[in-house]
Length: 276
Image (cartoon, rainbow, N blue to C red; front, side, top):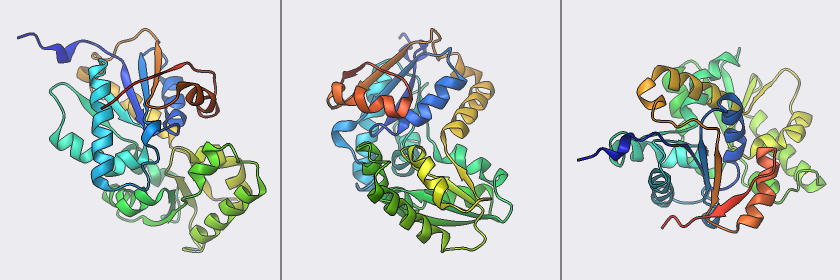
């Protein structure tokens, strides 16, 4: 029987919508030689407010669609999917020769490099906060770090509606930051644990005291992937290399192309794909 799992294929990047493009942008910058397929499940966004079971089912369907498209390695560039679905998929669903990685572990592993006080704040969706995944992962690697979490349910719609410059948006961002910072006077690091949030960085920086580190995930995930491929040549050799990028969305590609440019930093052409 021919083992079809071992043909080289693109690296799959999955997100519930657009946010994962901020991670993909950094991965592509670090590893431009590989082929990539990005899949945004825009028809079923947002994931952040959905149950564990639903996020797991949706994520699994999209991951298997990327496997069908020839990917041997898939990155969940979505904090909610990484929090609610990654472990179950890794433990129960992976076909031989396929790998799925998330964004929470690579960020949690290195967060100690940014803090001197061991007091770290997390800004995320309600789903990621409820899962406790960051608290668990950071404490696994760095038991000395105290983690404070705050959910920002309005931040994703602000970004997706391109309202970053409106006064109302600035008010909500300031209020959320106040609530997080009030949890500890010694907090010296804030992790943006949602891939949409880097687009709010100019506003966030206005309302965070100087001397507090603000960490976006993209570069950390990209560095972690570079390292992972070096350490796992058996995975690396299954990733094809001709620098090709393909973008799929489960919703309207015209709308996707328009908004995706904001996140990816360049014009893209996407196609619609059915995952179910």
